[in-house]
Length: 241
Image (tube, rainbow, N blue to C red; front, side, top):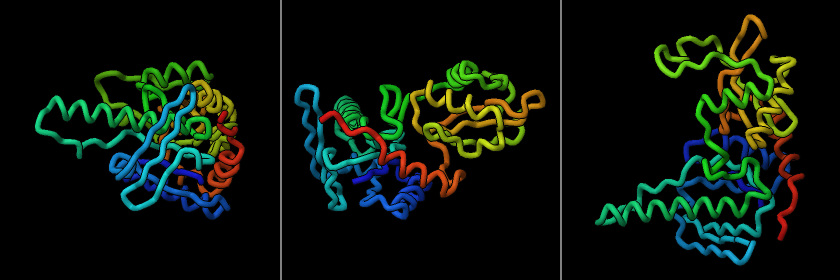
């Protein structure tokens, strides 16, 4: 089984899921975060250094970690708004426990996952613009001035272009020429298999770093990315159990 994990409104994930099926991966199951937190039955087992889960979704599908061959992970959060109790303390406790449970579920799949979870985010470490700028500069990208107050950065920018990095491939990289290797280095330093790198025009370098996202709109890279992602998923190493 191949999984696409995403938020309910993530249309790019649905597009990718369809494309992966057309590339021959079967079955491809799309599961959104609300399905996970509204499951009707769940079992989560931790035995020594091995963890697994099995959950029955509200639509009747059964999702078992041992049946998963590869995952594209685009989750941002675990929806917990339905967990309302008489006591605010009980509600807060239930929400915290559900979020931790979803993180643990996703971590079970990390060895066969594109963009595994982190303590700072379900699909990788969430970073501030300043943190991304530091990583980008270290990777060798020219970096746009970062405004922490005053004029909105969007108002000062030119046209921003997003290139998508998947492993050693850079989609849209032909437009940024010599910066493609630096985009790959940025993704590696961020621990991201898949990363969107935002670049804006620059008179000196042609383009410079303006931002990064773990959730790029994959549709901008077209069918070539889907074919590459299909191959990437099938080459992920098997889990150690």
